[in-house]
Image 1: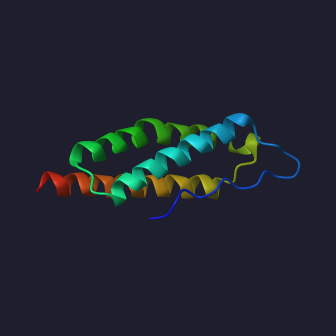
Image 2: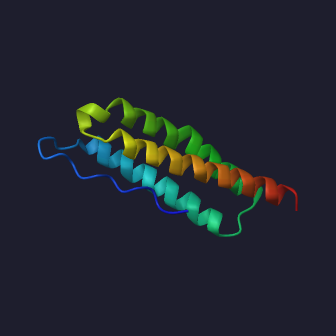
Length: 103
């Protein structure tokens, strides 16, 4: 698993709002922290905490970015890549939670 895809450059005729940059920073931080935890030996409660953070905070941010994609010049494929990366991370965290529960 890799880091969240980088925020694409702004189109020449459209500077992105500070909200988009802030949203990306929050998403990248959540992804990075959850990925670091997954790479270490985390227990089931820690895995569930990261799952909850991603599902309750990251996914709504992605939905908001999707809603402003045209106005902000955000490529839809990039948003989809981010959603897939977050979804894959959640699936891996869920597997880690099940595995540590079984121990």
